Length: 197
Image (cartoon, rainbow, N blue to C red; front, side):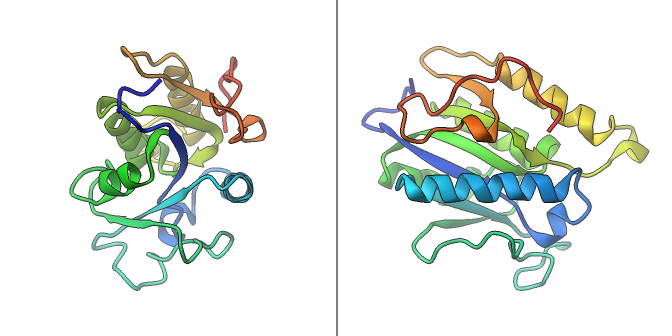
């Protein structure tokens, strides 16, 4: 239960599902399909879908790499937050948007697991939000040539530690996309066995 007052609502937060971010991502098509299913489910339940879009020298605004993948398209009335840091709350309007929507619980999906997903989850949790990670709806690139574990292990590890994340007055955890139920107050059945995707 969020520590934010008068914030009973849930939002789906879709992070950086952009051409240049996910083009070489682990199980890209399956993850994007799961995210598309979540977006559809949220819209059916009239749950806000909030989009986050990163920009940088490699993801120049207006470029093809910067654009959100064509498999999922933000609705005209759905908020889109532009960011240039890993944590989507840093130097953006995300908190203002979520506050205006009365949101205290986030269901998080997108990319990349070991960068913007992880940073935003921690940023949300530290700010008082309940934060649920959809275990099969986030992905990352293979960074093993720089010493990182293979992407499947990065995803599994992130799911594992977020499943057991705790803090006073807030809830965390993971859930598979098929088990997300935006119609229920607790959003989802907890994912007892973290998935590799």
